[in-house]
Amino acid sequence: MLYIAVFALLGACALADNSHYSFSESVGTGGGSSFSVTGEGRITAIRVWELYNTYIYGFQFRYDITGWTPVVGYISGEPLELELSDDERIIQISGKYAHHIQSLIFVTSKGRSLHVGQPSGHSFNMYPSHPDAELRFLSGWVNGAPSSLQAHWAVLDSDITDD
Image (tube, rainbow, N blue to C red):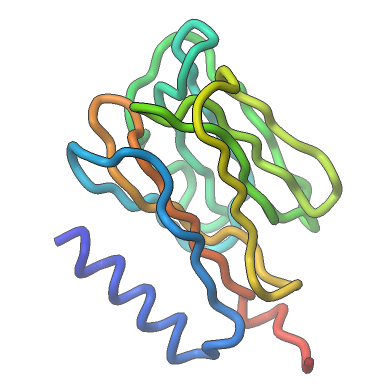
């Protein structure tokens, strides 16, 4: 069922304008259950939980229309959070992975960032192919904690400008 929702969303993005949608290759070992963190509107905040400064324990997004998504992974202690301003977008995700996602760095269009986890393991860097695109949703696998992820980028219809 999850795959049907993801493919429907991907299909809608692809039909709208192929040049304004891209995805970043999956990183991590995978395994467990698949997930997709989606919502309506723009991402306006991110919460990330880490396990004793070692690896990513869980995360969730807040969208301006649908609110907070379900948590992917676990909640443990207080989350690290990044609130975005009205004209701010997530334009890059970097980090490290081993058995689980070890660290995440979310970078915004205003040069701000959220650093979470312990930087050990294999490095990755994700960003959109279109300069006006922003992070729309994440998908991947969760085996207790997130074990892999893939970023999906798009230009929202209201932001599309002529190339």
